[in-house]
Image 1 (tube, rainbow, N blue to C red):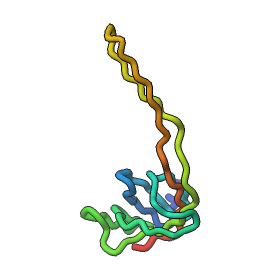
Image 2: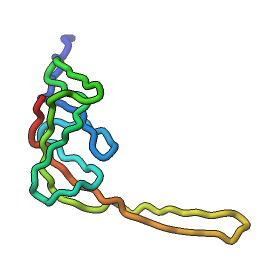
Image 3: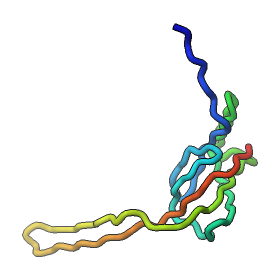
Length: 113
């Protein structure tokens, strides 16, 4: 049986935003920790850790020099409620708190290496 040729996607990049790393391609939509930008604005993600274009791979130490990822802010929101429960047995101590983590939805428009 003949082997299928491995399909290489367009440009793929690993970016860091808000302490998290995301693998992105053009057109992807990602949820990142809250960014101070209005809906519809273009922002630049400068911490690009890796860029792959076909078989060519550039790995940064720690960042790839001159690489930028442009993204459009699609909206801001809050994630699901997370409950934090504290309890000490036999101490009559119980606390229940909750919070919703803010996020920003970004759509990747371009990757430049």
